[in-house]
Amino acid sequence: MSSLKDTIKEILGEDLSHEKEVVAKVKAELAEDGVSVSDEDLCAVFFKLRRAAAPRSPRPEGGRSFRSNPNNQRFFINIGSVDGLNRDELIKFVAEHTSDITEGDFRDVYIKDRFSFFEVGKEKTDDVLNGINNSKYGNRDVRVEVSVRKEASAR
Image (tube, rainbow, N blue to C red):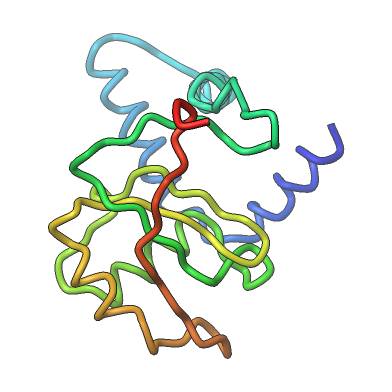
């Protein structure tokens, strides 16, 4: 449980204003439907949803199994958690360096220590490559490239 506790402490140090707005909106919408929910219950629901969405069948080598969407393009980017990156920061960074990408365009954001992966629609490939390459994240030169996902069925 200490790993979860450490993660919670780390996230509590981040800007959570967007997430708090989402929680308030969900509570208000539920109230409109006559449903009263405590913050604790709502937190438990979000936690359960997150756990349900987590991958359950890792590949033997420790990777994750995926089902690709043929309309999406997967990207590798050479920044990760050691650079202070999390899912929200990656989305913010990409959106700031591209002309027409919003949070809703992202799929399968996967943050590792020194690199990350994310997917957006294939039609945005040139925008991602041209907008992000040769940019900086903190003091780090950023490189992004098209990545091909290893499908579980290909093994």
